[in-house]
Amino acid sequence: MNILILGGGGREHALAWAVKQNPKCDRLIVAPGNPGIAAIAECAAIDPLDGDAVAEFCHEAAVDLVIVGPEAPLAAGIGDRLRAAGLAVFGPSAEAARLESSKAFAKAICDACGAPTAAWAAFDRLDAALAHVRAEGAPIVVKADGLAAGKGVTVAATLDQAEAALESAFSAEAARVVIEKVLPGEEASFFVLCDGTDILPIGTAQDHKRVGEGDVGPNTGGMGAYSPAPLLTDDVQRRALATIIEPTLREMARRGTPFQGVLYAGLMVEDGMPRLVEYNVRFGDPEAQVLAMRLGGQMLDLIQATAEGRLRDVTVTWADDHALTVVLAARGYPGQPQAGGPIRGLDRLPETSAQMVFHAGTALRDERLVAAGGRVLCATGRGTTLQEARDRAYALVDAIEAPDLFCRRDIGWRALGRP
Ligand code: AMP
Ligand code: GLY
Image (cartoon, rainbow, N blue to C red; front, side, top):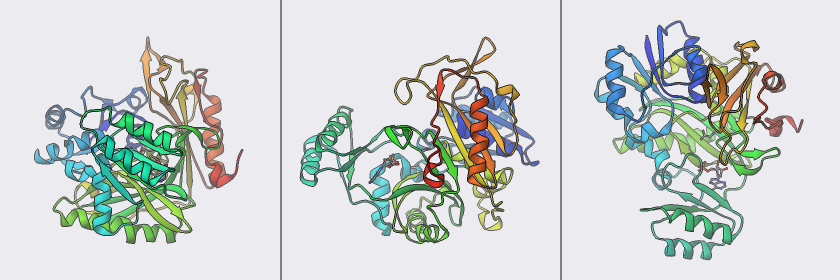
C-alpha cells in the first residue's frame, strides 16, 4: 500500500511511526513532514491546504490511502476534494468537520441530539455579548467560533477578563462568539473512529494544557499526555458513548453529512457523569503520540477500515499497557518561542516500541538539528505501568541535550501523584 499522511508535527511523526510498523505499508510519504519523519518516510514539499496539488500528487504517486493529520485542511475541504478524485481518505468532509471548525455548530448539534454540554449562547455583536456576560456574571467561558489553534478560548474568572476576551474577539472582522457556563469536574479525551455508520472506540488520554507544573499558567496546545486516562473508566466511556457520541454521530448521518474519521471528544467528568467540552475532528497532539505508541501497527488497519467503510470488520487488540509523552518546548512558548536552539544527542537514543522521541517543531540548519516551533520534541515512553512509561519518557528527556528547551517534570501527576 502507498500511503500519504498530511501534516508535519509530532502527531504526524507518531502516525507515520505507527503506520511503518505495519507490513502492509509499502511506501509512506508525509507532506510536508519534518526532519524526524524524514528518517522513516519520504517527505514531499506539498501544502496540505492545496487540494489540487495534493490530488495531483496522489495520482502521480499511486497513493492508496490519505491520512489527514491537522484540522485546517479538513475544514477547508481536503476530504471532499480527494474523495471526489476517487481516493480513500481518513478524515471528515468540510461539513462534518464543522463539529470542530464552528463551536456554535457543535453546540447546536448537541442540543439537537440531547447530548449533555454547558449551557450556551452565540453572538455576532459585541454589545449583545457584553450584555449577556454582565447578566450571567463570572466565571464564564468565552470562545471564538472558528478554528483558533487552541487559542480561541478564555475561561474567565472575572467579568473584566470576560469583557476583555470579548473586546479582543470582536476586534476581528465578522466575529462570532459562543459564551457558555463553566463546567465543573476533571477533563479527559476520548477517541472514537467512525466510518459514517459504525463506530469503534480506540482509547482515552489526558493531556496537560497549562504551561506550568501543577497545571498553572497560560494554556498551550499540550505539554504532555498519557493514555489510558484513569478518569474515563469503562462506565464513564459507556455513558459518553450512549449520551454524547452515538447521538452526535446519528444526528450527523440524519442530516446527510455523516462523519468519517476520528472524533476526539473533550469530556468534563463530574461524579462519573461526562459532559462535552468540545469536539475535534482529528487526533490530538500530543494525544496521538501516546495512542500511536499503544496501538502500534494496527493503527493502519483501523484507519484503513474507517476510510473504506469497513469498521464493523475490525477490532482493537489491547495490550495491558500505558504510554506517556513529555513535550519539550522552546523558551517563550506559548508566547513567541525562541527559534534555532540546538538539539543534540538524539542519535544515541533508542527508537523502540517502548521509547520514541517524536519531532514536533524541528529543522535542519547546516545539517544540524535545531528548534523551529513552540513545541519541539515529544519524548514518549510505554510500559506495563504508567510509572514505567513515565520513567522511560523522562529517561529520554534527560538524555537530550537541548539547553534552550524546557519541559514540565510532572506529566501524569493527576494519576501518579507529584514527582
Ligand atoms: P476548547 O478549545 O473548547 O477545548 O477549550 C480549551 C479548554 O478550555 C478546554 O480544554 C477546557 O479546559 C477549557 N474549557 C472550555 N470550555 C469549558 C467549559 N464550558 N467549562 C470549563 N472549561 C472549559
Ligand atoms: N492537545 C489538544 C489538541 O490537540 O487539540
